[in-house]
Length: 400
Figure 1: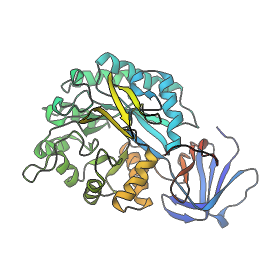
Figure 2: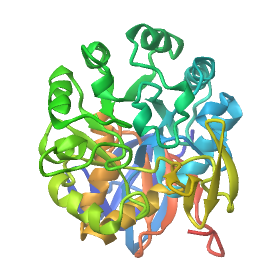
Figure 3: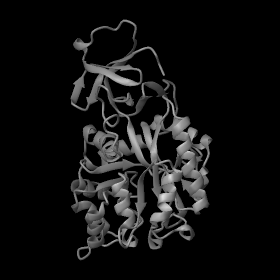
């Protein structure tokens, strides 16, 4: 951790309590120690000063609650090295913390992945890399008819005993569970998740609107990748999408790549859900940051070409979306502003995961998870807990 205080001086700071034009933000011991107008800054002595151009923005680090992999690595690899790769590469897209996300596989493979994340969180996290906040268990408690790219042969009926074993193996690090609520007949699993402070999410599901209402009453509070692999909105059966639009109890994930959901539909959904309940995610797989080709996902070969990942010609298989692209796309698709995008990429996920006391906004006392953007919202630098984790080089030819 950097022992010398850092002062970011200039730019527009998007703070929790308002926007500060041409202000300062001071980082000490991994935290934001103070921030405000330039004239309120007591002294620069003994500090590393980073001059921020006037047309640049300083925003809170983004939080990806649904990401399987990146740069050749995947949560299901079950290795420290794969988690290292993810934690190291994600700050380049503005992600400063994330949920390591599993996929439907054989129980033994999930066992290994969960134990690996637990061990990593206990002994290998450090400043200067994206922080793993816990695990998103996507599957195997999903509807076989809505499997998508999830391996159907490994799908299980919701089973509280199996989940409790996984909870023990993970050391209590499971924070979000995607399941098909219509298959959790007595809502035993949803009720248990709610009692443990774990987010229960509807995904890969054919639930009716009535089934969604009953699940919400039991504690369901989230929807996994809106529109994808779920019952859609029909004028006589509102389905999961209708519940996502109508029920304020639900936070709603969206893959804003323009592929999983057409831009026009993203705009329609944004008008219904608004920035108060949307959470931007990538749902990215190991092919993110890599070239076109074939890559493994849950033991299946996925073909990636020109930004689209396909299991077969008709089945999307996760994404290669980066969070900074989701951030700008949602603005382009909907007319939302940067403050709205910050809420969807940073504040809402932090609140949903119960970490808003330390992440999700720029405020004195919070973790110094900070992203700097130029006038076109291209990332120039990312700090994770006060340590520089990514810096764009002036002569960089990195692909967007």
